[in-house]
Image 1 (cartoon, rainbow, N blue to C red):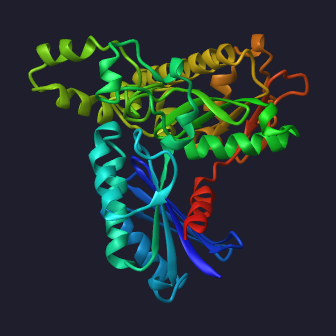
Image 2: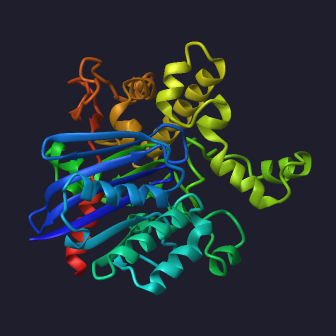
Image 3: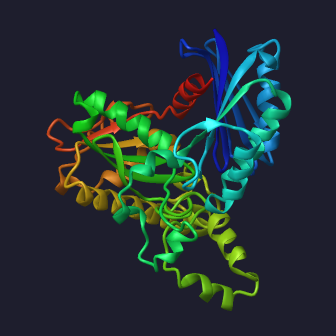
Length: 394
């Protein structure tokens, strides 16, 4: 038996799970959320216990230190050197990484070079990997790429309608993200449907602080909402999602606070989405709790729902229907109002939710018996996919 730690560093979170491998037994798991916001939350679950702290966690480096301290403080390990395998979710692998790989110094350098593809993620992920490398140099460290699952996209989906040279010379194309999650929940959905994965059409909605929607046909990603970077696609916590490219030069010309394109991109990545429209928060829970009294929070909620619905409609068209629509990740799994609002008005497509099943903690089928498209809530388990890849590459 060995101890393996799967680490999933999101734009504002650090999710982790410790396993005994190869048994795939979960020893402990935790989530550090709202990184960079006031009242950050660190939760650890172990031995049927829960330890929760409310802290101000400024960045991912501090989050890693809290994680390591918690492992020792709660006696989950007596020595962190008991951990022999480390796996890290990495958002952007470009066209360089088409599968998981050992995190050598050269791989880490390339991950950092690809930061322009995922500016909110790759730098944090590389930082987290380097911090762990310092304290656990003997552990096998594996990088697991979100983009790998989307390498099955056909050219008509991943190419942009631009001159060919921008793809051929500069690699400008759709790469997608959250691939590990989309792969896992689509496979679990096939089990719930009682059908071979190769015979299914599934729309997977990974909705957290960042979010993406994917059309999965026969177990392969055939289209996905995120694009060249995770800035594309639906509106998110702090990201704008898709907009007219002409907005960029226009706002740079007219807003004296934006000196160049990078300033504008930073604004679209870090100050937009739910935060930008509501003016109060990037957290969907805050938006929902304030939307009855705050018109901007209501608008942010309505815009978010609108964008998600549109992608579901697109992918019903791309695959000529679907066997199931899957909700996963923080908002998708836990927000009753979010799911209800997205599903409202989709009955023409044969998508019918059972309100009595659409409750907090719901998992599995929440659709009405006559729903042509099954509505499934499936907790994602990117960490298990990561742990399996560590074991495979040791």
